[in-house]
Image 1 (cartoon, one colour):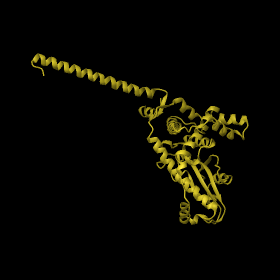
Image 2 (cartoon, rainbow, N blue to C red):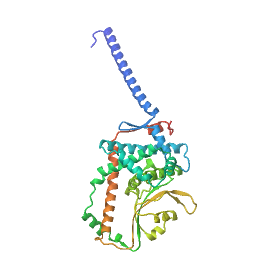
Image 3 (cartoon, helix red, strand yellow):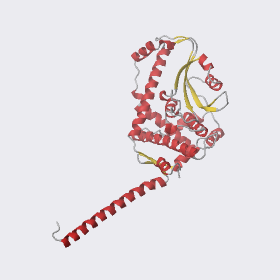
Image 4 (tube, rainbow, N blue to C red):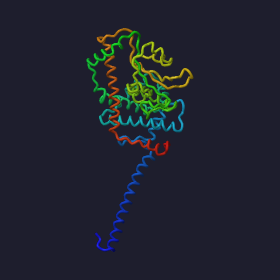
Length: 363
């Protein structure tokens, strides 16, 4: 405590000097922090996943690899690029997990898958297909490596933990006996649907196509991933815009032959050409009244059953029930698995922050 008035003034002056020095230091630290944040927003790095960078060049390459009928402009481009970046972040999370577990696809596995893909094509056809996709051979093989890696990861962390018992099968048969009394052939179908119109019911707003250009580009991205071997159900769960089926991996259930005849001609014709396990090309959904585009779909034929009663003792019935129960549980566990991985990852989306700060601009 200061004993005299002169000493008191000196003491107060000293205290003020210390306070000003502290405030100056704090302001400098805050400015440095904000500058560091801005450096991320102004750099080539658009996002990080557990410290791993996703660059603007990575996003540009992914964006350019998918063809589109109508070139998006303005806000459409920014929205589409933001959606693609979200997909890239999810992929990076899975790749990081696979690397930690030693599950990355080997060069031998990639080469084997690539040789299977190119077997029915000539070299010229392969080069043209890569050109159409705006991909180099290295890009395509990198996508194959990712697809194989994801499959190995899901098999280890999800699929290997699923068990369907004989009692599960018997209980299902008892509760659904009518499903196995077929008065006409039935087709077990699944679909991936993308629409050009915004919808509050879309299962994933981050990936929702908002117009024809975005819908076209998104469905092309999906079929490209199917072509390199990615699982139909997983892609349907992540990207299909049909709220009624996306949660179950796009499963439409069984459709009687008469019901198939009632669908649109393009879908009906595509399904009738499929063998079990195959999926269709991209099908345009057209409003017959005004010929307007309603969306796009890809349909998979899971199985086809002829007419007649099926008993529980029939191995086909047991296998069908086992497969259906297994697939349902797998889709449920996959959804939970993706959420857990996302929650346990450190994700920084600088691109999204940039768009927000710049009122919709990504520059």
